[in-house]
Image 1 (cartoon, rainbow, N blue to C red):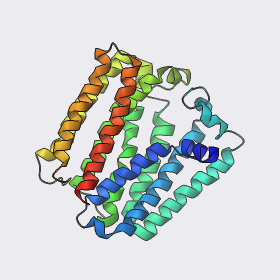
Image 2: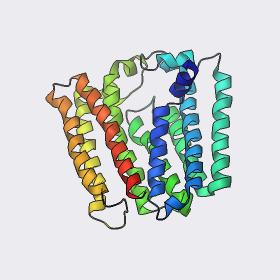
Image 3: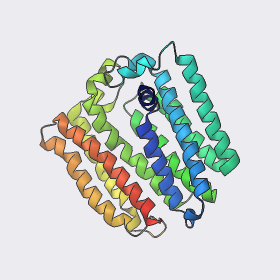
Image 4: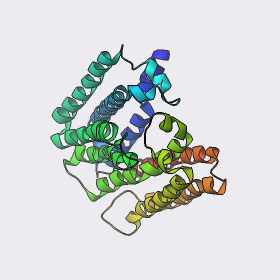
Length: 287
């Protein structure tokens, strides 16, 4: 059991599951997608392997700072100097298998999108941005967008307004989601010398930017209401309006509660639910 838990910890299984759901939502939005369960399975396998590989490479690169932070300290017992080489081989094998499966059994465009997600998380976010700028999670959040493009391309070998909408919905959601988590762990980031927004500008200014980003996210989420080129099913917009209203409540609550960390934890928790519900609504609409 401990081995399974350790595996889930270092491969960040919660992120992998979300990435898979993003890909599934975009895949299901393609007309007639329910006729191709095998291709969907291949997308999930490829995406899962790529996501777990990226997370593992992230842990390998961040060994020096993970040990300084309470939230990530336990990872150092699994990914350390003694196990690093084995972990590199393991992570490399996963991404290679992912790219082979997607390029040979699906199509080249899907493979390129999966590779784009992998590189944007490992290279762009982890290596280039994370330790250099408070814009790290804003720009690096593009990694979460690629699964939507891959899911759609798996059946169509193309990009559409629908897949781009889902991709950028995840992109716009990421700062709102992660800044709430980073506030709860602001001391960790200071100890690790990682310039996450609350560690550089403080909690109150971060709350301001959370609200700003949330308002932009809400406006963006309702674009399908005003255009017919994005197809997400008839129930998407009603659910989006409801979830947007609740999201705004949770994101403004910390300011009302005098920036209590419990309020930020609640906001972080609901932000997970927000994205999950919208993605499931899209999936259900086409099943």
